[in-house]
Image (cartoon, rainbow, N blue to C red; front, top):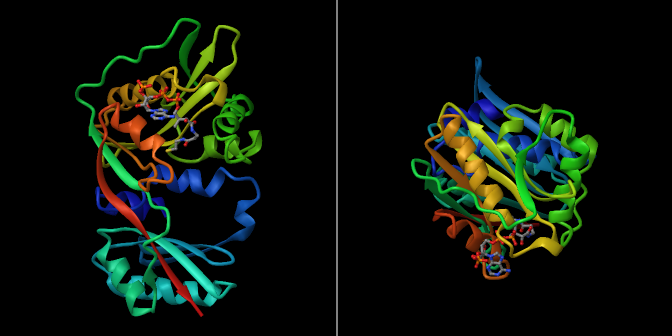
Length: 276
Ligand SMILES: CC(C)(COP(=O)(O)OP(=O)(O)OC[C@H]1O[C@@H](n2cnc3c(N)ncnc32)[C@H](O)[C@@H]1OP(=O)(O)O)[C@@H](O)C(=O)NCCC(=O)NCCS
């Protein structure tokens, strides 16, 4: 799956190698609901479908092979277990949009959406922290503490990320502890985090996910953790960075954070739906 994503990546693609790894491993037990199929020509993967039953499709297809997109949708229709099926694509992925339209899917204009944001890395500002906090990157073996700070940051939503599932994330390619940053208090408590993923072939880093514990918000901690990841990306050879916050007005705060550190909006996602 990641081979295809890396081989065909551009700012017009929904997936980066990092969010494939995060999506596959972060949620304990989620894999029991995954159905996955690959289309290939020899050693080269041309497309994949990743259904989360009962009815959500993630997918990627080589843009030069729209015929494979048609096959992925047909496969998804055969494995979905409900009458309402949904999928999300990035708006410029015309080969996916065409296959969805041909199969009777319609855009859901009311659904929440995400906007990819990009920035160059040649001039990354120094992270600043209030007194009493410091930045550090994660070390191998620290999955329990790392999962705990993720859960604290995402407590508004009830995250299920566990020490065990975070250990799987850490074991997945292309995870690197030097791209996984946290903010620590003087007491040694981890209170904010930002995880970076480097696609070294395309020299682009993805930040996914980011969080700050509610009691420590609005102190600049998430901004500092993100800047630390951006500096680590640059030091590791990346030329640009990507992050994908919500774009709809129902959840505007993360996009404000990223725009405050130099990210600019690019393409948005669109949810497609078919009922019946
Ligand atoms: C989004 C989140 C990470 C921000 O963490 P934070 O440490 O409070 O953010 P910072 O203090 O570094 O804020 C940096 C900038 O982001 C913007 N921002 C952050 N929180 C904001 C809010 N509640 N309202 C408006 N703007 C906000 C501001 O521009 C802020 O700069 P300023 O304080 O100088 O005005 C935090 O709210 C969180 O963990 N939310 C739940 C998880 C989540 O949504 N993660 C991001 C998913 S992509």
